[in-house]
Image 1 (cartoon, rainbow, N blue to C red):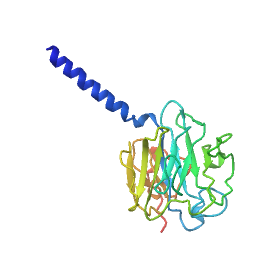
Image 2: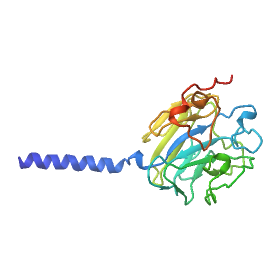
Image 3: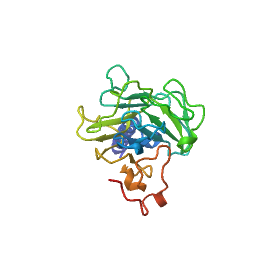
Image 4: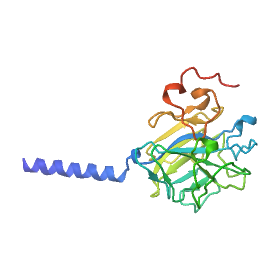
Length: 239
């Protein structure tokens, strides 16, 4: 009996070690919306600077679905032509400053190339002074990209959210990017390369849906539609 008990304890110890090595994704923020293929007309002006820009209007929305705040310091967004640590690559990369995302709070990170985004704006060096009323009170950040070449590729790319220790928390991919999305992400999803707008989750555990299926609009940075009305009689998608 004692030998069997020892074996059980050893097995439990191995399981506990494995769980510690692979953090619970529920303790982290998550990607809730991505606009990588900016609509070509004036409706593509996601950052509300008055102009549609193929790179500048790209954004990634991050939400905290938990009842306690999360400090985003050291979390990194990066795509296939960048790296977590920033030592290589010339793609899209943004590292959050010391910023506490409140319980159920939302923040939006714009590429912001050639953009003058209205309202309080944070960067990788400093958080915004307050929520941005132009984006439903969400905390808004700028990647401060100066080149339109630092952008997400419409045909095939991915964007990953990594925790400060480099663990890939969330990864969204589309098309057939090279290099492919990182393996071992706590959560990953492949979406349509041409969703005619952004892709968005309606719930923390939900799949990313083309935004025009959500409510007929191309995107909604800073706003997560309520579950009760989001999929009820959506507007017809624009062609």
